[in-house]
Length: 328
Length: 255
Image (cartoon, chains in turn cyan, green):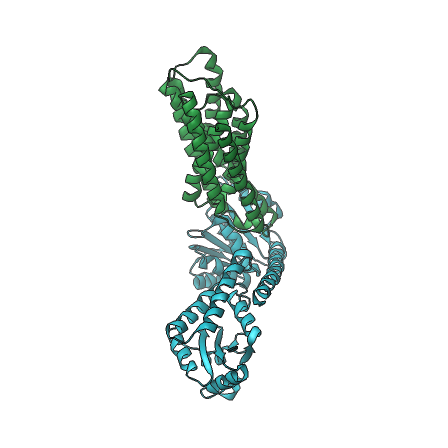
């Protein structure tokens, strides 16, 4: 029996093509069963996620099996759509599955969701009787490789964009952001993104201020927060947990003396400051205050770049571990 | 026989410390620290049982026993608090301290090989000793959580996120709450210990003991009062928890 994998993903096909090939989550077993009725194909597993559709089959002869599978798909899809398919056989298909389960082939490197999706696809195929010895052994092996990779590497850890680094830092300071108050100074695109991320992680109160009040009102409405005029935003300093600042001001908007004035009122609660403006909005001396954690755009970019390097290193370790597993 | 049990307890705590540290260095969580600590705790329990049997009283008759009892209370509180506050990493920081206390008890002369059997027991005195050592456990754990806070605080201020320790440490806000809760718990138990100490039969020579203990109690009381009344930056609270515990350890021989 030889192994064949035929499929397409977010790198090889645009979303409109992927939509055509998508299989409903509860029909994966049925589809796998349909495929083993084709000539020469003995076993099959069908995987379908928002980013990919792949069919794994065990056939008498890889080339002939792939030809039959291509013909089967071509009967229901256009020639243009078929051009987006990739085909892998033997160890190449095996390697592809292992990398996939480990999250190395995902849009978000190291994501864990794909592991569960592959498991679900396999279980449906197994339940519908579409798998036997070859694919059972292959998929079970892939799950053990996936678990091993997650236990022994930190491939899924570390954020690689400025916005997600800020969210990670917030989680390290506050844990759950539930009940936290986010203050946005300046209604730029970057601060909008960071504020949105904070809200998605549980922050409940949002205050926006901007020199042009109308933009503050618009952003506050969009994010479900409250706008305050630029000349009285300091009043919210005592209640804020996170402040994102990105104004076009040439002088600091937030100074150490302003924070010092409200420290006691805040009962020395931690304050997370994200300064994404150039020139900087927040005086550097603010970062020296005990309970204040200040990050400017350079620091955030440096952290994102370190995370990218670390992840690249983890990818290399993962690839080596997978190669070890592939060896006969 | 008791010395062998002490060696076993020390080795198990040291194993927890070494293994926990190596896991943290790799940025991976390990449940084994808790297992090693649980085994060490059981060995300490057997050891204290043996010493209690030999003395016919609470085994706090010499410095060695006091060290073992302190290590035991620290381990007990870690096993209780570590899981309640979901602070598995607390073990990685607690284990070296437990191993250190047990190792000190191993130094020749610390543990009386043939302790005298006590004929008369004063229940207030026994309670005073037991509560005081338990309070040491809680206050020691507060210091450990304080050290964890200080380590994380430094990493955050230096923007050093790649370190394995950074990845595993609980958030700042959570650590600060744990330090505070442990200080309150330790202080409450210490208060009970002091009350029992005031009730116990005392000889004149013990007055230094009482004065030192009351000063120690007052120091923690002032710290908690300031925190309650006007608040305190988390770093200062953690630093105070660590310094007060170190001072308590230093004055231990006087108690």
